[in-house]
Image 1 (spheres, protein in one colour):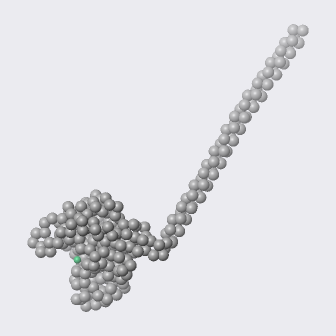
Image 2 (cartoon, helix red, strand yellow):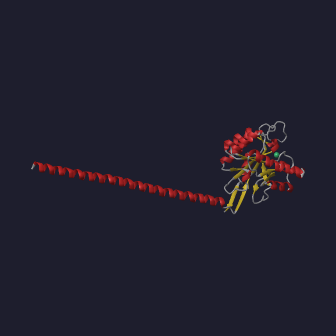
Image 3 (tube, protein in one colour):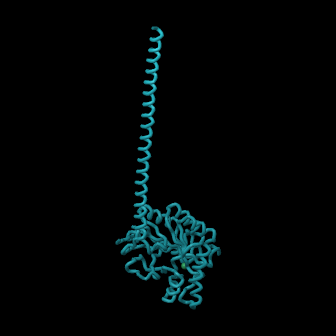
Length: 302
Ligand SMILES: [Zn+2]
């Protein structure tokens, strides 16, 4: 009897063990299943998210492309283009005192530009202003070393763009910019260069051959030496005529800039080779500078 009972007990124990094992197995399997399902769910979510993100990016890219491809129906811009020469306190023996702007005055102007939300543009942007609202262009003619010493630190401080009109043959000449200085300024991204001819002679007094040499070779030289593309011919002493304009067009210049004429209105100054500028002279009060700026505007019709 005892033997039979013992057997039954053993059998009963076995049953309980199997039962427990089954339960454990079920729990483990369920756990794994839940984990797997979760994983699948997460993966699905991630996949959905990724697809969603991709779609979003694609839409954004398409919009960017569309924006880039889409040309505005019309752009009407009013841009004060200022013309500077020397940035120096002491004008020494020179008689053209008004060409010497004090660096402190220049700084006041840059401060005013940035504090009042004006946007500095390079000369080569004058024909594509649809992304600006209050553009202003600062140009420096002849460009002596004083600009590197007194102007470059300020344009970096205020993060403004300046276009330098370089006399090609004068690079590395006494008191003029060196090749290295021009390159350093270009590398900052805040400076662009344009041509102010080879030797700064009044173009209308030259023969056609001489004009070609001044206009074409200065462009070729600057483009080759600094690996840039030029857009603008700055006429020495503001002197030009139709013949000069024809050569400039042929050389691939898009714009020609004069020395006078005040603010540039794109709807009035339709001749792109006779773009006017404002003389930023030594005695210009900040209020005058500010009143020129106040006109800056862009109206875009898409
Ligand atoms: Zn000049």
